[in-house]
Length: 299
View 1 (cartoon, rainbow, N blue to C red):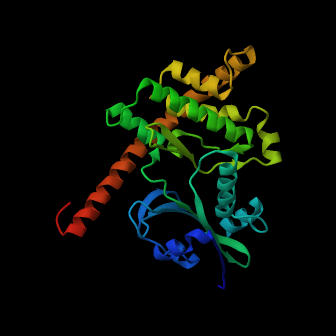
View 2: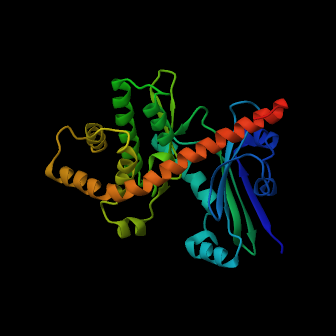
View 3: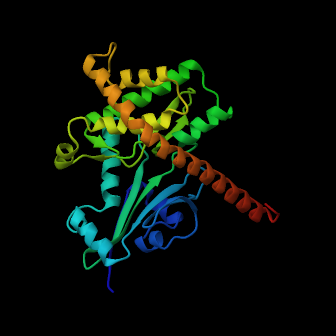
């Protein structure tokens, strides 16, 4: 069946993506090598090394293999509107304009059959030496990373400020758990955050979720943080998020609502943290095997 491809590449990355063999829709969709960073039934994310060390790319692909998937996508607005890859590309640029640090988008593309979307993707530049916040917290807990009290306080305050800016700008993540936030140490030893996947809320979403929609997202962060932080640290986070020196009765009710929502999410997140640990170990084993194969010896 005839199909139509569309690809948009940031001009500054055209030659780099060509060197990484990511310069056509067909090449991106058929790519099978590279480290699997995430996957589900109809999506996957590959890490593809770039032509030079420390300059890789994450390729997030969405597949619509059956007509029911394509029709469902049409009903969600992809027939005439933006596909997921393009929407995420646009959102990341908009977040950067707000001052919210995020992974840099470098390309997006799609394949359509009769204008029905059959696949799409987003390519983002690797954030060197970054890992997700859950992995970072596990390293701190294991003693592999050290944080001084001022550094912990700085991390708490900075995360709260960025999330507040994102929410004030009308962006919602939907799954704002630590595993979906990247972190790395800056040159000054303090930590930098990078956000992924947040999108601007549509008017009907704001109406449907109510005025306090952000409480659910703070509960996501709280569910992730409970195993690694103290109650005082979580309270400092909330006060920084709310820009409060003293909590008003309304702000105290907000915190109580977060505390009610987070325990069920925490149980689910513990399973995801366990999976995250197993996934990291699996990737480390793959890297050891690849290095051994390149050296011609056993893993």
